[in-house]
Length: 263
Length: 248
Image (cartoon, rainbow over all chains, first blue to last red):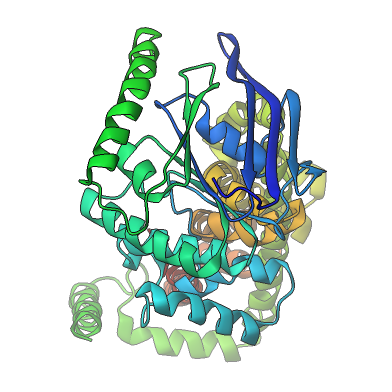
């Protein structure tokens, strides 16, 4: 944990219910968590545990039924594109826009002139190994490239906070590992506060300062684990292996409960 | 290029076959293509025949009016039913059922309501063209990926921006097909309306030529209509290809 850095995101007793055909379902219950500025916190838990819901609430896309969410001390009431950018599991690129125009989308909404948008977008795409692909449409790009464009689109907003919802979940393992290394690098350069959602232990250990393990539905925070390993991280180092065993023990219980719960 | 060459060859072959088959037969009933230019010249010059340019212009304006109305109403109702889920669930089956009714059955009542003039033709063209348009708008609204809307909203897009920058482009490739079909049906509606009962328009001239067994003139009109419709549809196809160039 980066002690001393100011508290940037605070969740205080947050809960969320969803109405379904078979009645209301409590997705998230009494989640409290603080994330400091420039910290990388991962929400780790079994599928359906409400990780994405928590992220959506921080991003202002989902309204909590109870509790409060503060960003820089202010209550979140909706999307705040000047402070928070989101990346989703599905890249969600606009298929009718080129890579360049996808990256410029958020800036376009903010009224940034086209020439400046182009400059910013090119500046983001180039170090991502997407030079020469700026005029391509999403269907012409590989899965990993699309996800990088989606991340570039989020970075283009130049927000202090980046929320990532299983951004590499749909990629094959090799691409996923490479993207993780790349994200560590990006983060080192941009100094963002990141809240990252995953169900992958490896990914959580490779990327995070702290890992919040969530319970199966209703999602609560079971434990918060510090990862005090230097970057770049070797996942076969003894500390990483121990940590993985510890996390697996916790996640396994919840995954079993989720399976018994008919998930 | 080779495709174009083949198409031209097929067209020429068809004309040749037509010529060979029609030439020895009764010229009152069967028209050989070689007689068409003379028939066209007669239509444009002989004073006793209905003046063609005026009738073509009338038909064109009727089609344009019918199509404009069909597009406007189709967009309005399509968005209304697509965006208001409950309304959509109530009225969409009704719409689909109406679409299934052979539209010609409505025409007599349209003539009663709107008279023998252009209004009833416009109404019939509208009636035919409206359904594919409204159904395609409705289908388009429903297939807008919710996920892309979420992405835009997360970046601060307001409803109007979401509509213009996400919904419309996401719907374009679905809508353009319905708009093409709608135009073709507007043309059919107006022409059928003119043929079934009127004193003016291309359909009227067609009926006139046919009634007097002026087969040459009749064939000229058929070919003119076919050429016009093909040209319009080719333009539509180009537009569709442009919209779909990023296609999935």
